[in-house]
Length: 424
Ligand SMILES: CSCC[C@H](NC=O)C(=O)O
Ligand SMILES: [Zn+2]
Ligand SMILES: [Zn+2]
Image 1 (cartoon, rainbow, N blue to C red):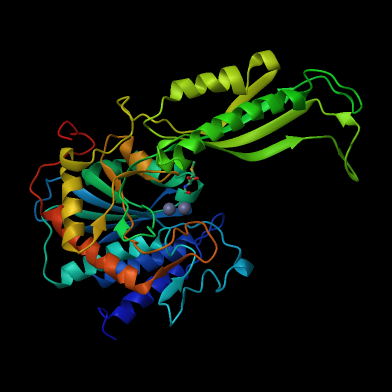
Image 2 (cartoon, rainbow, N blue to C red):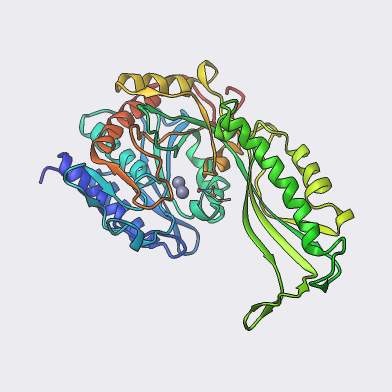
C-alpha cells in the first residue's frame, strides 16, 4: 500500500516494537537489519557500527546542503527493559493495537522505540516533501542504554566516528506527560550505586551487646532513612520537583548465616551489607553527600566500609555541572519552543530527568542535549506493565518532529560542537 498512509506508519512502528530487544539478551542484529531497511526505503545511507562485538549502533545520515555547519543528532536507544508477559494484558512484544482506544501495547512503546521511529517517519515525510536540510542530520540507534551505556553511547561519544559528525545538538529521550504539555529535560540526575558493609563480633542470639554488624548497619540505615525523608518531603510539599532532590532507595539487604532450613536463628552475624540506588541532581553538592557517606553512613568508627558500583559525575569535562542551557541563552531551546508551538503543542517547563539517559555522555563533552519524547495526555509507563502509546499521540509526535527538524536544520546560527563549544 501507500507507504505514507497512517496504517503503514503504524505498521512500521509495530514491526520495530515486535523485535525483542529486551535486556539481557536483546536481538540487536534483527533491530539493526530492520533500521537499515528503513533507511534504504527512504534512500538514506546507513551503517552498522560494532564498537563492541555483537552490539551494533546504526547510524543514518541525511546530508545537509551546508556540511560545514554543526549537525543535528537524533538519538535513541534500541534496547528495552525486560517484561513479565503474564502480568500484561497483551504480550509485550506483540505490539497489540486495541481497536477501541487506539492504544499500542508494547515494551518500548514509550521507552523509546516510539522516538526512534518518529525521527525516521519525520525524515521520510520531509524528504518526500522536497525539503532539503541545511545542516546534516544524523540518526543514531544505540545499544545498551538500559544497562549503563558503556558499550553503546559512551563508546560512540568517545569515538572518531562521533568526532567526524561534528554534532552541534543532541535530541534524546524524555518522559510521557499525563497533562497536555510535553516535558523537555535539560539535565539528569547522576546514578551512584552504593554498597555499605558493616562488620562486628558475632554472638549468641540471646545476648544484648553493642557493635554487632547488624546494629552497626542499622544505625546507617536509620540515618539514610532520615535523609531520604527530608528529600522526599521537599517533593511532597511541592518545594522541589522530583529531579531536583537527591533520591536514595534500598536495592538490597544482606545478612544472616544460611542453614538448610532457612537462616540460623540464634546467631548474630559478623557481617551485614546493604545496597542503595542514589540519584544526585547536577544542582546538588556531591562533596557534601560524600562527606555524609564517610561520616554518617559508613564511618570507619563503626567498623564500616563502602564501595560504589556506579558513580557518574555530575560534572562535565570542564568541571561544570552537566546542564544544557534553557530559554533564550540556548538558540536550540528557542527553536524547540517555536516548533512545538507551531505544531499546536505545549511545552512544559524544563525539568531534570529523574533517572539516567545516554544524554550524560554527550553533556559530558559540553554538548547541548535535550530530552524530549512527544507524548502528552499519556500516563508515564516507562519500565511498567502494559506500557502503551496511543496511535494518535504517536502520529502527532511525527508532525512535531517534522517541525523540529525543519527548524533545527534551517537555522543559520553557527551553533557549537564538541571541539568548538565556546559559542554555547
Ligand atoms: C547507571 S545506568 C542505568 C540506566 C537506567 N536508565 C534508564 O532507566 C537508570 O537506571 O537510570
Ligand atoms: Zn530509555
Ligand atoms: Zn528505560
